[in-house]
Length: 275
Image 1 (tube, rainbow, N blue to C red):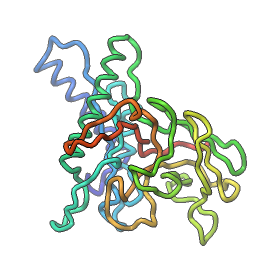
Image 2 (tube, helix red, strand yellow):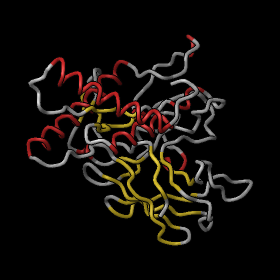
Image 3 (cartoon, rainbow, N blue to C red):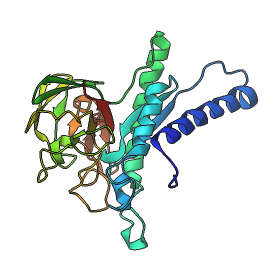
Image 4 (tube, helix red, strand yellow):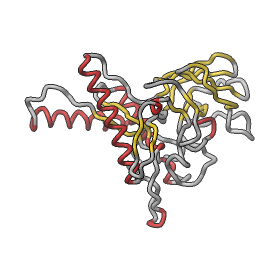
């Protein structure tokens, strides 16, 4: 993306690219087509692969820009975050861990296919197109040391799970100030969150170690643990969350090796204002 890219500029370019694609289809290639096909996006989650010196370390501005574009456009939808997959290790080639393995690409296609089918059903029913991904939609103070986090849950109930995606601090949550910096407990502890638990089918509750400071303005999810300094990506390390729904209880993917993998929706890399 270059050193000049920002969250805002990438969002604008993605929205403009979809529109340019549609204009080419409707005006040049298929002028008889009256409906505008949605774009389905897989959220990139390899921003820590460039190392701790990179602008993107624990700063997923491209992933956030993808989410911004999908939330702001009726023609863009996010299918899933890609931290749930395995990435190819290209360290021997001197390359960062940016590319999915062959099997992961195949599985990503299965998530795309499900999202497309869901959106086709919405279009046929004449209802607004859903957002197929598990996504944080609100973070509300419910006490000096408690925050309720509400999600768009595509299927079933919220679950905290460390079996497929390795455990990460606070299941992926952090409290941040207006500039995106971590809000610490004190000079010796940068982690304000004491615990995370499910309180309703679409709501998690965060318990804090101290009263919420006045400079705490937003809640982030999946930005990455600054204590994990190794330059990797995927479900075993790097930016990720342990938050999913239970869609995979009824929907599974059969991998190339014959194993069954539940098609749960894992939470997007995101941020929301604290209210």
